[in-house]
Amino acid sequence: MRLGAQLVGDLRKMLAEELRAGERAAMTAIRAETAEVKAELRQQVTSAFAGNARGIANAWRSMVFPRSGQSLRPAGLVFTKVPKVIDAFERGALIRAKGGRKFLAIPTGFNAARGRRGRGEKGMRVTPAQMVASGQAFLRPFKSGRGFVWCLPLRAGEQAGRRRQRLRLIAGGVTEIGTAHRRGREAWARGLLARGMVPMFLLLPQVKLTKRLDVKGAAERGLRRLPGRFVAAWAAEAGRPR
Image (cartoon, rainbow, N blue to C red; front, top):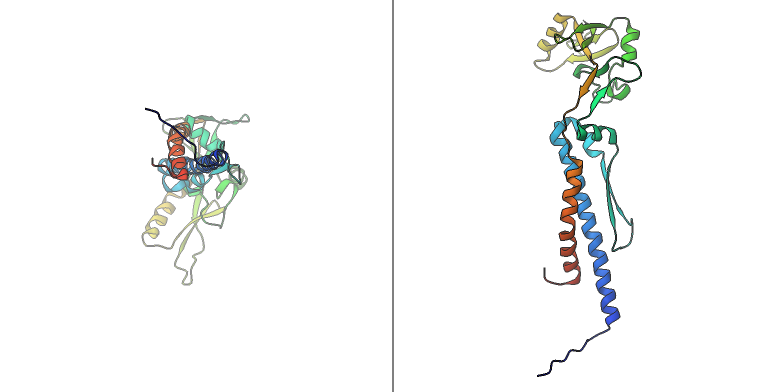
């Protein structure tokens, strides 16, 4: 028994079409995987820091090369605009005061600028330089002896609002830290005034960050998924069953 085989069609054309299908598949696979790695890294940030880190999460960006056209050797790049922040929380870094300083000045929630008004250096209402310049800042030591709470005296400012019924809280004559304009805020404001002070910074010699991110793991998972994604995309482009 004899078996014969014959090539039907133009071999060069068939190979060229297969090559183009492979290029399209490679670009499709790398685009999809790059987007998935970026999405995972953004999810890591939001899961680790809740809703307070939307800006850090959105700082993850991606690019695919070549920027136009097709290629069998494309590349995907996922990067962040805040690399130092990401690196610190991926390593669980130990942060110490620099420049001969003894303490890190960590702003408290009272010292966080919100909205567009009053946004100071690095999102703080009051900077350490302004604390010193005010001549009113004072320290309260931690019970552990490891650091201090850096405070400003608190007083009531002129009432705000159309009916002048909103109690304003002024820290050291430097900044307004709150207004009692919602239900329950009046008692909160009165309680702060009774204490007569507001903590603006925590002064610590060093801070050990908790490891919260796994950037390397996200990249490795993406690399493991990529071959299967490429094969499936090539089969789809060439019209072959998977």
